[in-house]
Length: 372
Image (tube, rainbow, N blue to C red; front, side, top):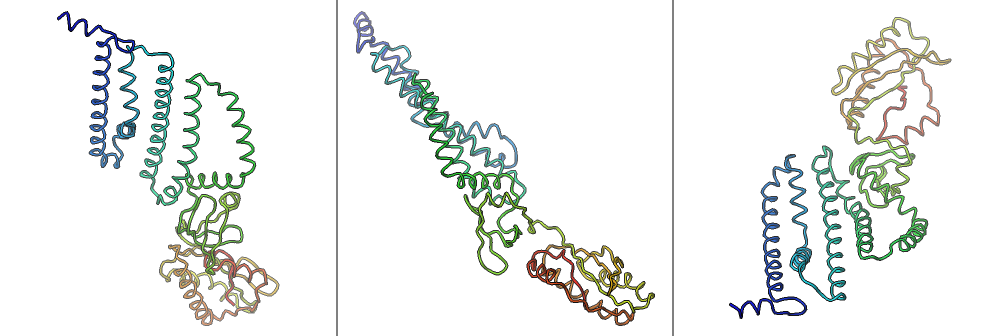
């Protein structure tokens, strides 16, 4: 027994052999138990993953994701720290060990922060009622920008913990950041606009947009630009920042389509025939499938014509359905007005009206149209 006691208390590298034995035991136990706990929690998360999709166990899923993303190198450093707490080392080796452990700690903090951000974005995508193609395409950009902030902040905190003065470094980074921001302000503006589109979702891929004098279907929403396929076939490329500064009309989210047109009637038409026009137009429109009648009134007495204004709604946003309905209504109005003795007035459209119709074909039917 005395031999074992002497061996236990004998000194090796500045510490007793007994202290080294206890430290190694703590190291191996810690480095064995912690990975087993991490594997158990990861398996539990996979079993509960389906329930998490249905809206339950959100906090548990986040905690399990953080445990699952715990680095094995960090667990090794944690085991070394637990085991070496009662040991004494030379000052140079202790500084080196402290530096490594501090860097491992803040590296793991940054990994956990990135995991939490990714988990929040995935949760938003799962709970979104609309298609998430836009958020999915922009998620990498968002994670890249957030990652720069998280890893930069973690590096500064690690340097501060190691006793390094970070104020001069922050001043230098601030000046460099301002110069870089001024140099790439257009790109940064488009990047921030892309993130705004990703979260606010004013439009999605497949929507038909009218932006200033540009009209087309959204094909792709990128980091810097959005691409439209126009009604004439060419591709239109617009900067994301320019889109957010413009008034965007999204026809892809129409639930129904409003149509307005004007009937020009001659002054020689008998009053009795004029009085029968609203009822006749209403009967024709109500008999047209997928159309809801709104109004028909004699609103204006112009110098050369009497103008009836007719408004109806097509219950589907499909332009082909609207065009077919308008054609059917026009033909039946021509037929009915000949029976009633209503005389049309030939008034040529102005160039401005013709230009507007050509520019909005296939997208907007709310402009006035005349039945001559």
